[in-house]
Every structure is written in C-alpha cells, then in structure tokens.
Image (cartoon, rainbow over all chains, first blue to last red):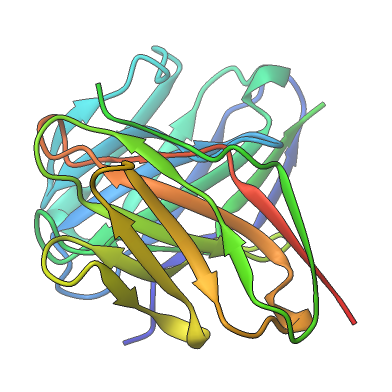
Length: 113
Length: 114
C-alpha cells in the first residue's frame, strides 16, 4: 500500500496559463475525490469519481476546471486560463467504497502569479 | 445541511498535559464523523472515525474522540500531549445523502509547548 500520490507537489504559473495535476489513488480504491484548500480554511469538495464515472461536481468547479479518470485508475484535474483566485492546495483522496475512509494524498500547491 | 464547527482557532497546551480539540456537528440522520491532522505543507492524515457503536473511539498516535449525541459533539482528546502533536486538526462529517463527500470544519491549530 503506497498511499495516494499527487504530482506535481508544487506548481507556479502565470495568470492565463493552463495547468494539469495528476492523482494516483491507492490501488483497488474505486472512489476518487478532489478537494481544494485555501489558506486558513478546511478542504472543500470539488468533484468525485466512482471508477471512471464523474458523479458529482461542486458549484466551486467553474467551466475552466475539468477532471477525468480514464480507465478508473489515475485522475487528472486541469485548470484552463488560470486566475489568481485559483491559488490553493489541491488535494486528492481515495476510498475503497462508499462510506469507507478517505485517504488523502500530499496535495499540489498551486500559485498563480 | 450537514456541517461541523470547530469553535477554537488555536489550542495551546504544555507537553505532558491532556489536550482537547472541540468539534460540534449538525447532521440529518446518523452522523459519520472523522478527525484528520495536517502537518505543514502536507496532505491530511486520517486519525479516527465514528460510525456507530462505542462513544469513545480510539485512533492513531494515542488520540481518541468522544461522541456525545445529546451535545452533538465529537471532541478529540489525548491524555498526554507531545510537542510533535503540534499541527492543524480538522473535524469532518460524511455527507452520505449527497455525493458521500467530506464536509470539513475550519480547523484548529494545536500548539504543544515544551
């Protein structure tokens, strides 16, 4: 059990650029979640997948955000035309099934200049 | 709507003393409650959870939490604090009626002084 991994750990970009983050869940975990955490706040839900199906998107997830989970394995979160307000820690979590514990990755810290 | 509240932004305690980090919840139906810890520039680490059963839940690193239905509370406790326990602690409730997502409190920073 290697845990949830995320790449990159840090990303600095200029406003208007596109960025993509990757999350590798714990193997055999069929649920994968994305959260966003801003300074001084708790994580907020963005979206989640059951296998390859994206089942829910938060209103926080504007049209500039897109997430995929091809083949039900790793997931990517892309932000197009980044804005300074997108600066945050992006956290990925996975769980074996509904109601099971969510285990978090180390996060990707995004800074938009 | 499901929610949790952490009334203290920071808790200070001397090493060796008992610690309590407070959490209250508001849910429809049975609560599924969690505690996570976050060290600087790291993700969240799972400490413990309450789903059903005994009101005193034991977790990792010597932490435990007491579920109190009448007071709608789920306070995190440890009998003897360590300096290494200094971190940010989050209480969360599982939203079983809507996406199964976790809803987090705003966090409590625990500072343990030598």
